[in-house]
Image (cartoon, rainbow, N blue to C red; front, top):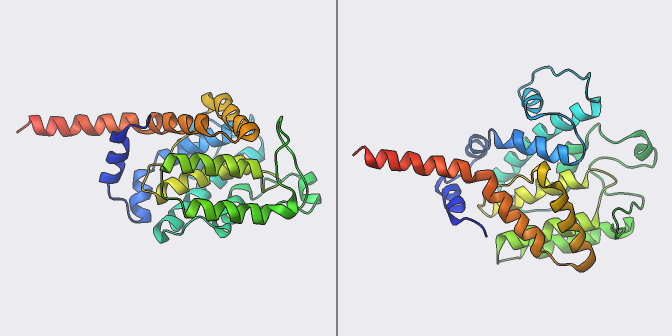
Length: 256
């Protein structure tokens, strides 16, 4: 169950502008990038990812050039979130395409590229994944995404329930040739921010639980497991900051 103290702490900061958000998410953006990339097999550590975010050189002896690009792209994608957040632009095909283009620039391999696939454009070929062989046919993707956006942008209920549904359905549609997971996790957080909820980190250590929750949705359209995971990850992402904030307030009160 979500800790109301986390939501209240976030909303008390009254984050309105991209500068407000940048300050609130300064370290979060690096931890998120490290974990989101790691889920997909990227070997860069938190410290290496931080160096890339700060424009420092990183040795590529142990990792590939693509892994470096993936971390750089996460930094640029964070900037895209800031810009769109300030305008309070709802989820749209434009935003989905923009996030994917930024995240996957320079990361499509030669095989995918030779099939006409490009970052920021819906897939032109059929790619099925997982035990359930999920993934909409290429000619169905745009309409499937439009329907999903219509549902999510008109939703007026439980925010994390909507977030779980949006993420599970997006991954089930699998609109791009590659990079659907990274894009989906970024979109999930953008949606939460629009609802005045803090973003969350799906940690690498919870990767198997995360994949299982998505597989359950693919089989049964049941999202309770994914919603529960998102609640746990949200609490885990921010609980220490909330505790520090509460302790600071108590110390200030006790000083009078």
